[in-house]
Image (cartoon, rainbow, N blue to C red; front, side):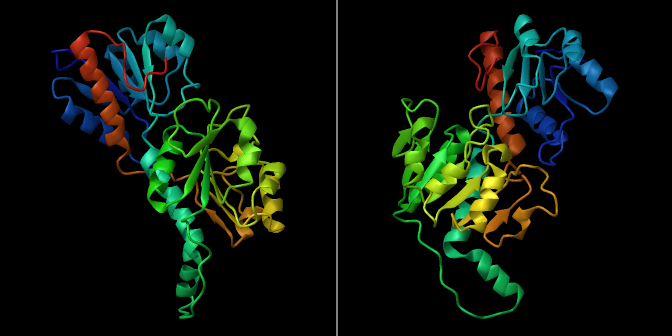
Length: 323
């Protein structure tokens, strides 16, 4: 901790998150860490100065050149779950710890998923269409969730939060992950080699895995064909995990009941893309990650780690450490 009020302990780089300014983050951190000097880098000059002074830096991006200037840096708290864009080797060579934002988005994305699934089950979208037309005419619901099977591909913090939210709906859950031998919150867990067999039994497919060489195009024609014709596909992962032409073809041919997509491939989705034309496709423009509590949850992680470093004198055993 620095006692000189002109010296920066924690530098918050001016990266907003889902439209929420980083100034909010800096304010929360200063309130919760009153013995530390927290500064927000609003300009390029402030960024250079604070990077040179701070022992802790919070932001999304850090270049190799900036790292060279960060003489006192001990911890880079990345504001995203992924850290592959960072100079990880150089950070490791300097002995600088790196943490990520894993877990921050779980509650809100899980609620986004549940909202979509309930919309399909109760046909709430049809209700809204009739409301717009001021049409008081009854319609039938599609299904009940009770007794259905929900398969979640990817059991990271988001996937686990999705499974937890479905816990009160009397559904069976299947998890798909690289390491099925690990503990799982689902009733059943399989590896990626068991995906096809799981899809045959799936009423709701939720895709929440990272986009990697393994998962790119994971849900293609064969996988969509394996689903029952009344299945719903939900994607809150990355657009590239689902083969878009195969999905369009499946929707046109009534191979599946419908799809709900917060991410698409391509993205942004062009205004003339076929996906806009389906009444049984629900689209949101990559906003499921938004929550007004984002910076509070980021602060929970960083405050815990700063307090641990003060107590131990080291930046080891940190929450969400990835490097």
